[in-house]
Image 1 (cartoon, one colour):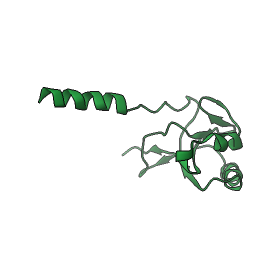
Image 2 (image 1 turned 45 degrees about the vertical axis):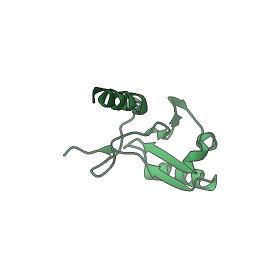
Image 3 (image 1 turned 90 degrees about the vertical axis):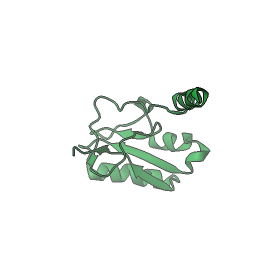
Image 4 (image 1 turned 180 degrees about the vertical axis):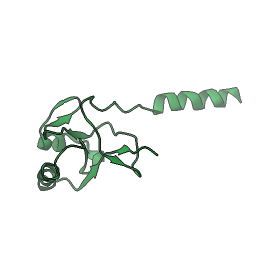
Length: 112
């Protein structure tokens, strides 16, 4: 029995990955029904409209081209809450025109 418990413990230690924390200057949008886990491959958008990916500045088209095949054209966007809607729509339109099949917004769960 202890072997099964040990194997389960090892499985969750190896299989479970912690998503990297968002950039300190990024203040996420809050929605009460969102999933709080931040996916590892998201395109973050600062309040000024700068796009960031994997910790540095990135072009939205380069981000889309670098998505793995298993992502199947799904782009995840993590906008700053102070980002203007027009800027978000412009970036989203650029990704859609470049071939993104689906766009998903990553938000932060609101306080209960």
